[in-house]
Length: 252
Image (cartoon, rainbow, N blue to C red; front, side):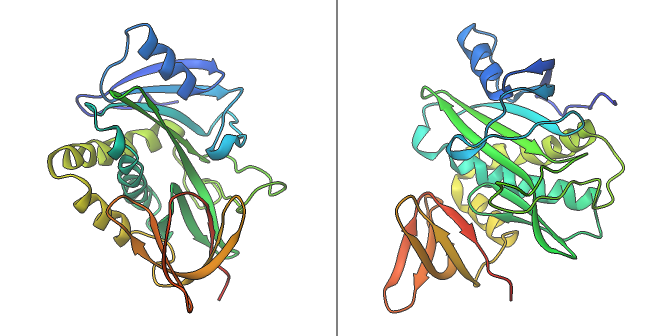
């Protein structure tokens, strides 16, 4: 496996196997080894997790990593970095797979258009630690996609889409796009990040279904608000802000 050329000021911490790269990043914070834009990468995760405590299947050959980001007390805005990361990943994967259409799906997935419809190829998990650090966990199905059973969305690997590189190549491309996005967020806030994400979004202006903990909503995905909430236009009911939920776009 190639060693990625990490763009300055990022650096890499490699682990052969961990429970979770997010948990390893948390341990680095606890023991004083944290650094801004430090990336923890593992060949294998034994207890990878996604949003809402879901299991993230983490076979060797896929990318499992966590990026430590200093947020300087901006805890209330830290989740905005998930949109920056999704847009950066869409851009970097689009360079690696120029014949594949890739889009960001709210809140933190990346989807690829295939002959069998849109399928998920990457996801993220954001976990703040205090008011100074955000851990951005990133999983990309580079070599293999998980089985469909029990999944909210069908998945596809980059290899199935024609990618012939390895997971470190994916990481190198992502960080090259993500670091400038972090700088932009720090300098100009969410406005340019929000527009960048919307320009790469899946389903903007289309009918969708949103599953919440206690109800299921239907409407049209009309955009993001200034805090990153999904704006759902419900027929006869007006606009509703969605802060957390699972979004589905019915086939046309």
